[in-house]
Length: 597
Image (tube, rainbow, N blue to C red; front, side):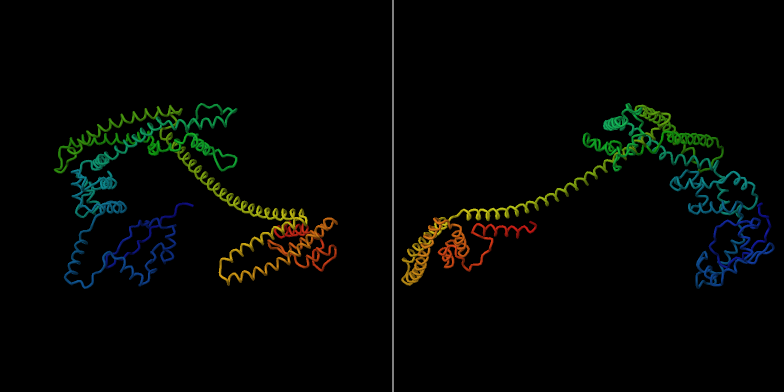
């Protein structure tokens, strides 16, 4: 498709409002370039054609138009204005209307320059006087830069020179451009002034760059810990590369140090730098703070010497430009009374020349130190700049610190796990001790029962009779002690004790008679081989009389006297004597306490 056909359309009517409205500073498309665009379709939709434009105002209803008039007027209407004031306002408007402004430049230029002048808030004469006098209190560096950016071009000045009309009718921007023609080489002077205003800051920044580079060179050159780390990493690398063409290396390029973090171990959770930092922490703990030895390496890595030299070249060009402006200013035959350019700039120029020599010497010294450090680390000075070297070293130190931190966190996690496991083991041990103590007590109970069973199995009727005699003696001794004690008390107490003692005496006499029968029967049984039945009888005696001094009942006496004759006493059919009975009781106790068995 070719270019759209150019058709000249009629201008759209634009009736001015009675009040001043806020304008939109857009860029209009010329009428000749409307055809073939979307705007032609819109105009057609609005009822326009090639001969007459469409009416876009019909899109707005009266309420919308009223709202725009009320809210987007340039000045809010003042109610109750007097007739005299209204008359003066109309006269002023007529006077301004009579003085029609003449715009010589493009609307875009006028708009941009007009906005910049409004920000300065100074009259044209004030601006020109401040430039003549180089008054940095009224015009600081930022304002001078704004004036330089909106300075008129040669064609703009030519347009103004060719204008032969009434210069009072020129627009605001045209009048400003016209006033700048009073200053010889206006744009060049502004450029020289900008150079001198920024001279101090620029040279301070450039010197600071060289300071950081030289400081970083000194820090790296004198670091012993860095050499130890490089030794460890070289040893680790040669160990892994043993037997290969890459093994047996004397040194490596500085850019490979950071790649140690790319080599993962078999678990995939740790890389080679983790092992290096762990080894360093164990054998060389001072290495863990190596990053603190290079405080200037960060700034040194951000600026290259080539970039610095480019800025220095710009500085030298600014110095030469200032020199040329001074020479031109001195040649002027007619000077404005406010012109102080030579007076102000000559001492500044002398200082600039001195600073240039100092900075150039400092640069050469820094370049020499940089090359020496690069050669010391085996780098090619033509391929690797000092900023790249410091950048690689800074990245390695960052990864080293990161690996150190990760190792510390991993160790803390491991210690916490061990502490938890120790606490759990302690709980398990305490529980086992309680169980063991419980089992020990059960075992002691079982042993006690077994001992009793064994003892009773080994007893004979004579042993039982001896035990009864022993208990009888203890009873008699207790009775005698009680009788002795009662004799020292009142008659009432003696009567009570005597009655009680008499009753006990009668009981004991009856028992003694029975024990005599038991003793004689036991003797006969021992002769006749009936000890088993007698043991059973004594077992029944023990069961029926669990006190410390067992007294045989009539039933047990009957068993002892009748021998093998059965009595209506309920016994376990499996129990034949006292030992078996206790053994069976012990088994039952064991089953109750150990249900699993």
